[in-house]
Length: 631
Image 1 (spheres, one colour):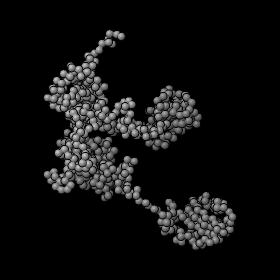
Image 2: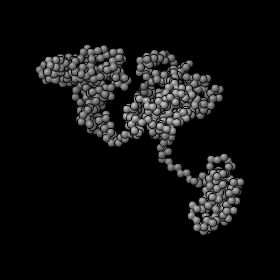
Image 3: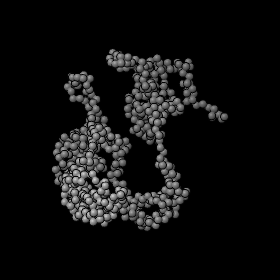
Image 4: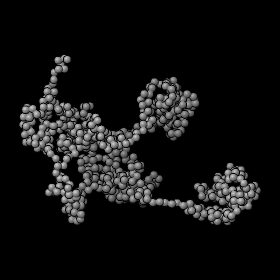
C-alpha cells in the first residue's frame, strides 16, 4: 500500500474523535459548549460549523450563499396545550402529558430554522450537543437567490420553487427518517413514499401496454435513410417544394423483417397547403405517392402543415414567457408592476390588456364594445363583520377570524368589477400579478348595447337579458370553478349543475312509456290517403285478393319533411299465406312491392296473416288507425 493511501486527513481524525463521545476529552468539550449554547438565543447564527467534517458531508461548502444556524430544542415528550391542563371533554382519559411527537427533535430544529428564515432553503442538519434540558443542532441553509448558488449546476436544484420549505414537508434527511422512508429491507413498509402508497403498489395490477415497446423501438430506430425513403423525398420535393420535409422510417415499430422499409411517417410544410382543410392536404400527398403506396410502401402517416400553422407567432412566445413566472425576467417585471398597481385605485380601467395573448384566449378582441378593468383583491382569509370582534351570541365559539370564503379571489374580482360597472357584462378574467398583500386581476367586460356587439353573431349571446350579472351567479369560468363545476370524472359529484342536482338525477327513476309516443303520433297522423299508399293498396289487392288490408302511413313519426310518404305499416290477411312461415310471407309481400321499395318507399313494416290465425282477432282497426289514418 502506498504512503498517500495510508495517510488519514484532518476530517477523518475529527470524525473519529466525534465517534468517541464518551471519552474524557469529548465529555469535557461538550459540557463546556452546551453551557455556552444555553446562554445564547434559541435560534442564532454561527460564523462557521462546529463540526466541519460533518457539515461538509451534509452538503455544506465554505462559499457565498451558505449559512449555518444553531437551534435549541427542549428534550422530553410534549404536553397538550389545553386550559388548566385538563381536556374538559370526552373521553375523560384523553392524554395531556407524555405525548410522543411524530417527528424527531432534529426535524423540529429544521422546522424552526426554516420558519425563522423563510427566504432561505434548508439543506440539512446535524447534532452538536445535548444536556439534561436541551438538544442542540446546527442547520445548513442556502440562499436560493444568490448568484453563486444559481450559477452553480450542483446547487441549482434547490433554487426551484418546488423546494420551498422542504423541511415542513419532510423532504430533508431528518424529515424522511421521521416519515419512515429510506432504502433497504428495513423500509419496505413505506416503499413508494408512504404506507398507503406501498399498499396501493402491492394491490394494483399494472398492465405494460404496447406503448413502452413502441418507445423502446423508437430509441433504437435506424438513422440512415434507405432507397425507398430517398425516392419518397425526391417525389415530394419535386411536387410541393417544401420549406420543411422530414421522413422517418417506422418499420422497426412493427412486426416486419429487420431492415425492411414499409412503414413511414412524413412531416411536410408547403405553401400549397395554405387554405386547404386537413383531409384535402392528406389527399394531395397520397395522390403524389400513389405508385409507392400501391407498391413497396405498406403504411404512411402524414402530417401536412401550411406555413401559417408551422411558424410560432408572438402570442405563443408571450405565453411561454408567462409560464416561467419564477425566471429572473418575470420576477423583476412582476415586482415592478405590482408596485405600480398598488399606487392605483382598487378598480381602475386600463387602455390595453397587460397580457394580450391571455386576454385573447379569454375572449377579448381589440374592437369597440370591449373594455378591461384591473381589480385589486386583498389576500388571506376573511374576518366576520361583527362588533368588537365578538359574536355576542350562540354558539359562543362561533368563528370570527380565519374564515375561508367559498369563492376564489378571481371570482371576487369579477364580482367587484360587475357591481362597479352594472351596465356592462363580465365576460372573463385572468391573473396579472400578486404581492404579499394583494392579488391583481384584469376583468374583460362587454357593452351589451353597443352596435358592434349587437350586430356581431359571435357576441349576440351576451346581449340577452339572461346574461345580466353572470359573475354574481357563478356563470363565468372562475365562478364555475368555485362552484365545483367542470367536465370529466373529477367533477362527477356536481354533474347537472350542483351536488343536489346530481343526487336527484341518480335517485329519480324516469319511465318513458311508448304510450305517449303513440298518442303523440295519433294526434299528428295523416288523415287522407296519399298517392303512394293508393298504389300499394292496388298492387296488393291485385296480387293477394286479401280479406283484410290495412295500410298506415307512419312518416310523421320520423324526421322527414311534413306530408312526405316514405314509412308505411301494412297489415294483410290472405289465403295465399296459409301454411307459409312468417319469413316466407314477408318475402312474398316484398317481392310484390319490389319497385316501390326501390323507389319512393323508404321503410315498410309488414304483418302478413293467414285466415286461420286471423279468426278470433279483433276486426276493428287498431288504436293508431282509429285516429283516421287507416287506409
